[in-house]
Amino acid sequence: MKPIYYIVESIDGDYATLRNKETNETIVMAMSLLCEGISIHSELKYEMFEFKLIRR
Image (tube, helix red, strand yellow):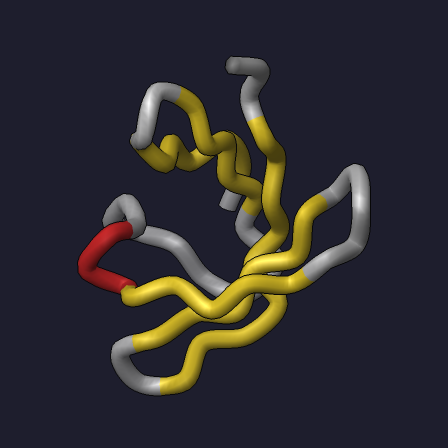
C-alpha cells in the first residue's frame, strides 16, 4: 500500500477537511484520528493506517 499525501483544507471543531494532493478529492476526518499540532495547510502522510505530520 503506497502512502497518500493530504493537505489540511479546513478545521471545523472536531473535524478536519483533507485534500488528497494527487487526486484533489476531499475527505472529512475526525481530529482525534489525526496527529497533534496540525493546522490549516499542514501536510500529512497516511501510511499503514496512521497519519504523520510532514509540514505544518
